[in-house]
Image (cartoon, rainbow, N blue to C red; front, top):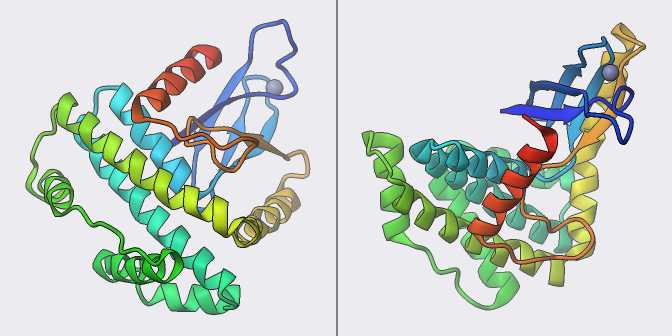
Length: 242
Ligand SMILES: [Zn+2]
């Protein structure tokens, strides 16, 4: 996934933004160099489900409907992971122990879903409503080359958006301290990576870039629809002039 953002040194309001881009890695970091040679380690300062969700929105907006379905599905799975880990943290488990526990589940999305469903039931007292028809559609697209139309991909996008709203909304309302603690723990790696990179290139600086993701860890929580995120994506693309 490509991160596109403006150079913080060259972009001076009201002048035009000077853009730069780089490949995002699994630590949510991208090394970007602007046309004038300024180098930044850009951190996409959101959780993994948000960033992947944002990529699914961008894929849909660009007309890659099947790709959007697969990416949005991955975002939902990462939301399952986030909920389970935050619930375990709030229940007194150590972050290192939670990481070890989850590592064993990483190779099986079914096991991850099982862990999430148990955590959700323990947390809320209500069973999570799985959606076998949605899973079947996603599997057809991902494994059988089924070509998703815009209508079906949009429908799937609304389903994923609603599901992530429910998951994140519960965390924000009932486990916000644990959620913030968990997100802070994820950012430790950002500063470690910055130290490593800066040893080789002292001129590099850390900066942050937003996404068109579901905005739930900033100020004010909203419950977006897939359409509202598509509109936000369009506005961001226009703003960045790319
Ligand atoms: Zn620059």
